[in-house]
Length: 293
Image (tube, rainbow, N blue to C red; front, side, top):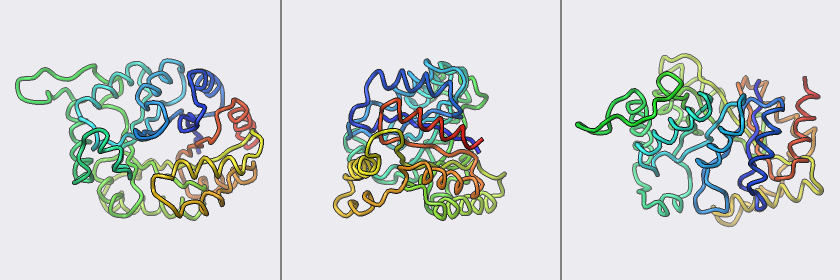
């Protein structure tokens, strides 16, 4: 199983040095990909610009856009941004797409929150059409640049429930799921549901990716992981404090249990999403992964 690392863009003290230093060290380490996610009404830096910087700072790791809230954006713009990133990275981009769960992001972008599942389906079809060289409308020139990966980058769906997976099985190359606490049973259930959905759609088995929040290599990792989780989930209102307080993935044993569970579930890749920005976090993670080999 591959292990990817997310940039800690959702942390309070993430800055320019974080992008540069994490990308350079991750490139040298045992990681399969580097990634970050998209939020608008939050403190994080822009996902697209950050991932483009990561593409320029690295040569080996996959550049995993994990993930774009596709129905909130103009499809032609996303097609051009992803194609540009694919060229910038030398053909290393993987695109995650989903509908997201935060209406505030849609409102901030003056995008409708309605029909977002249908618009996700339509948006993916639009991306692939534009990457194939079709013009955005009759009489227009095609949108460039051409992707280096034939047909465009692989597309993974941020699908969690059975209905979302059934839809995604029609167009996605796999799923990018998430288990915040790295729960083995949750990951196994998601993997089974995805395999069933792809089989029902008469397609080859999907690429299976999941991930979790964690923190290693910093003082008082348990309280800091809980604080990070609570801040990240605060938009969903009260009631998340108990979940945040119970986050277990702040010891090497707990992170290894999550990785073991992901491997047992048959995942292709697991993304570790850090709750701290110091290089000590990344160094402790590299040490843990190397000790598994």
